[in-house]
View 1 (cartoon, one colour):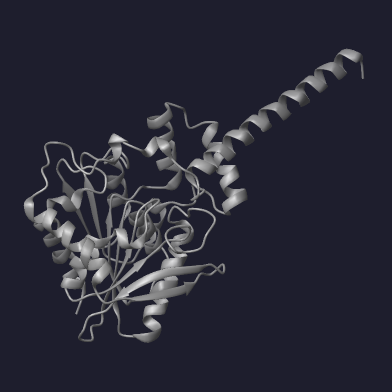
View 2: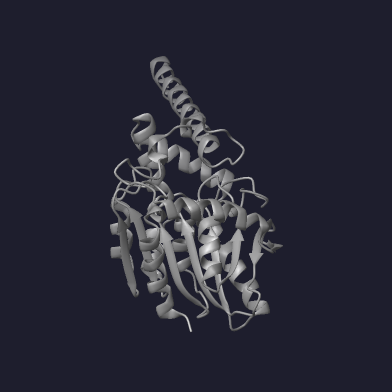
Length: 323
């Protein structure tokens, strides 16, 4: 090998090492600001995409009263702390609000990204008022549940199956609804593609995303004005190594296509955090009994601000499948 060829080869190797190092740094940075639950996310502060509603949508007086009542209810109503050991050995926390009179109706409620179970106070109170036993869960890496990474709904789907089985272990006649908002919506959609027992009667998802990869690619462009490639490729490799799952595999779109459970899809048409366009893709992919409810002027997670119209839609759909 000539001296010039050696120089070219060493230069090429050095270039590859530098590129790999840079991409590794970028991938780890992305992991820490997106998948590591212990990292602060200052770019989420005062983020207009997280506004529940645009000015055109005013919160009604009754909706505000419900919010305040729900915050008190979720803390003061009789409930029990429950735990579940996940399939990979994590101790997960849940909060069980049972009816005074025995009821076979159950709802499992999943919260959003960087949230926790008791934040879901309004839907918890509403379902309880409809005669459901309510199970609020802290998803892995959130609230009081163990976990060193955020599952984006993918590993959480198997945790949801565990919670379903735990309910059925003490109530084989349970009729179960799954309800989730944002990442919780993606979680219940990803759960829908698993081999669920017939006890799971209906699923209600509110503003969930098509896949973790799609959502992060969208946020990368929206928050940082950066292209998906090669950043998402590097980031996905790090997520595979450190969290043990693939962001493309974490696909609600693929899972709803396999689902056998009736599903209600909800989204606000002013949602710019999980883009409104995603819900139509998800709805079209589902091959089950389904319905779609679009709330005009609602931002991310704000569809419930429609108040009575929102909950009437939820009850009209779920009641079709409950005894």
